[in-house]
Length: 72
Image (cartoon, rainbow, N blue to C red):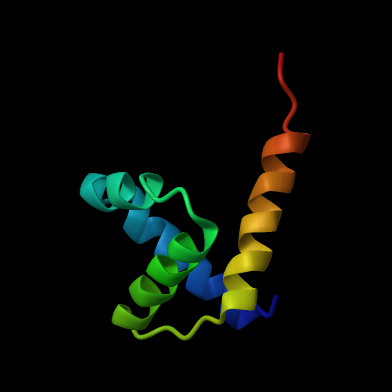
């Protein structure tokens, strides 16, 4: 991902973390395509351009980070 894409995701994360209703809406999506579309819509509404591939890469990175986390 480019630094511009990283910055876009950082902005989106902050927005989602500060909005409980938005978190609920996104967490309720169980289909990956629906989730990617919702993230792209959210980005577009924020003036950011993300592709399906950008979102897919971020999803994979998130899964990797979750799997690799160190538990006590």
